[in-house]
Image (cartoon, rainbow, N blue to C red; front, side, top):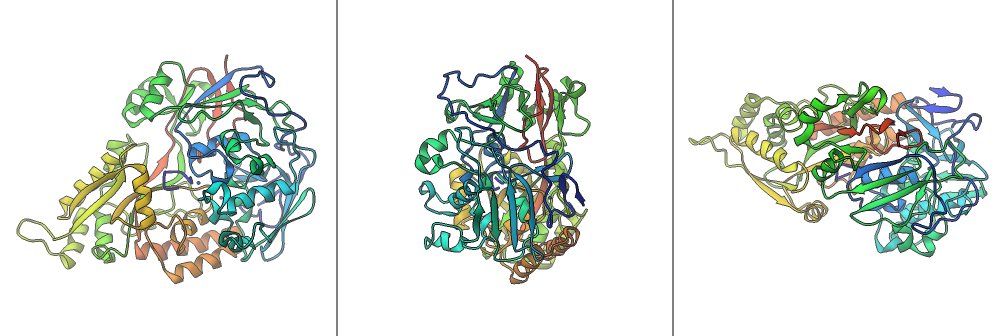
Length: 565
């Protein structure tokens, strides 16, 4: 999402479905252990001890989420919490590279991928004892699609725009998704307005979780302490800006967590969190840029970039499905010229930013698709590399320099002041000034930057996007389809829109990815954005952590994590 988080990838195999062919048949029930919560337990009040669990407890650094209620779960921090509290219909297992069953035992589609049927496991409950059935999923999705939910329309709603009845809900003409039906208690049928081969992946994202009736009865209370159906349950309410406490749900029918609970320790910034980690108060923490060099001197790096604790490897710098780029408002009179946008891209020294600012923990971007994303191609974007001489040559053709080397181009770079954005923008500013482009930094707070994105009231702005699921659709459609919420730079190309719709309708996964690669070429020719970097994890674990796999999206289920007392 805009705040570096989408907040956001099949051969048939028995028991699981991989990236090559999950369209026609979902996983069989046999051998499936990752089902959903079991019977009976009512959610305890904070501190009453009724759900006490044995075993070690994990403390995990977290930035303050915007929301932990699935209906508007829109950032990585909230997604991490939701993955512990809720079982979606499906879950994407990055280690196996498979879309696997969770609340759904199996699923299938019709031939043209316009109707999907999910078969939900029976006998499972929410943490308060309510049954998890087809209606609970329909209820959850309709909360997302109803703009009146909590008087705050969900930023996740666009994921469901392919479902019949979505437009009627968005306009206020309906309170139900006509395309979602429950022919019996444990069958969910979803009818789409267009063929969409990637739809099962949508059922793995946080906002597609089921909710009990309590979510409608008392939305405010539910937002502070969501009642889920996953392996962990809330232990009291979310203390905004302080902590979120979870307990192992002892009646969970799947693989029960090996840890007794999780304390998400919310700190004001990464540097504060890392000091708490160094003081022994946090078990897993992000490593701020300023501490990367010293951390590498104190701890060994994980070989796969994602697994912490095994063989005492306590640093992880694995690739993530996220991209950091400059968004360009193409209606701006200065920036309408694609040649200027290309020259700006050529002028930026991405390698220097990644090595100097990030100590090699980010990767220069040569495609809008990050390196870990299916469909990525090396050097896919012709002008997304550093070549100051080529930038000057291109500028000389259209914006010749005066005696002082100036070209009469004045730009503003918008960014929010928290995080590491200022040194990045200063590096961009320095690169552009070297080729004769005057650049002013426009630093604002996070809320003001969001307002600027909504109003398209900026020239160039930093933007980050992390895919919610590993498919090029989640980047290309979300960012470049005309009118989409996250297309905050006003890009519109009818040919791209038509090509996206056509790609979504392709049943074969390899063919669909190839189609997105062609769309990628179309977008790069227009250059509405300037890719800068692909993200990497930057995680450290204490000696208490004996095993923890953090998936590329960060939002990992913690059921098999091991922490020492």
